Length: 395
Image 1 (tube, helix red, strand yellow):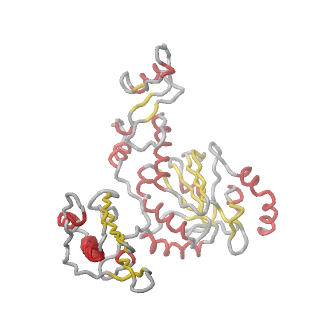
Image 2 (cartoon, helix red, strand yellow):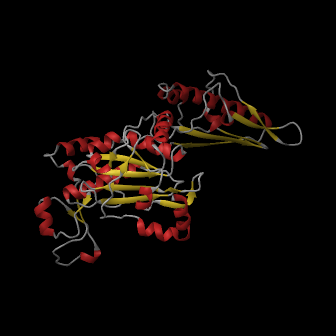
Image 3 (cartoon, rainbow, N blue to C red):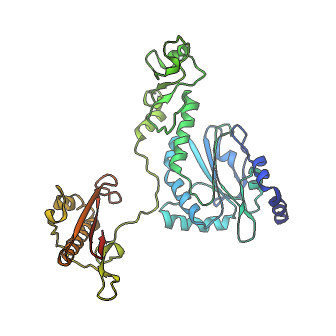
């Protein structure tokens, strides 16, 4: 029954998706069925009458992007809980596959899922929600869901929707940010400007005149933007007015105090970064390019300098105020990085010596700082290139 239905949908799938998809203000349906934990799940019972909710769709189990997304969602579960919000995943597979997939998610991300992952193997609820990508099909030829996100108010109406294609993983930090913005509007009656982050100034709503704004925020509780269109005019309402993030001044709510204390400290799961290899496991970044002895071709030869060799003369490399020992000392708490710095500078010294012997050597040093020091994934790094006739190395 399901396959013929989707065959019919192919001819008008785009209009079908637009027509069926619930939007802001609509009541989100009660998802009833199985999860990896139970065969008698009800979304409404799970959320209760006071919690906010987030439902996010996944194209399928055992898919790479979805695996990382569920790990990221689990890593922020405590943050959602602090905001009185419960999360629920949704995928078009059955409970047995969900349970097996959970083990993979934990192995890949270090996060053990303990929130419900709803099962919709027959696509019944996905049809109701209109969340299909007609171009994306599984092995059985059935369309898979897009990466839709529904943020629900406590009354089960949709507060916000976001939809990503299957090839793009969702930004769960952004989902948390818009949840904060929605709750600022719901709980405190303020708006949030572009690129707003918790702790930033919020905006006085446009439907409130200056007198009403003073009653709500205090006489000096907001600042008015100096706009050319309003200069020299007497107006009851200036349309761009900023006020403090209300959770910073809300002393009556324990939840506000907890959220204020969390500002700037939230870190969600991230995929592993690429690191330079340590000594003894050297790859292309620890190879140097030399001129071959025949045919003028270049070839790669591994550099294996002594680890204790830190010699780089500043006048040879044109390094201004570079204290190598200090750099290595600062990174001593991350031993692999100390070895990387050691090997890297030694390789540079060796390459400079080779270039000098060939003559016409020119060394260029480009220093840059990618992020904060002392973080092994964002440590201060320096890029070196040593060029001569037919010879080049980049570390």
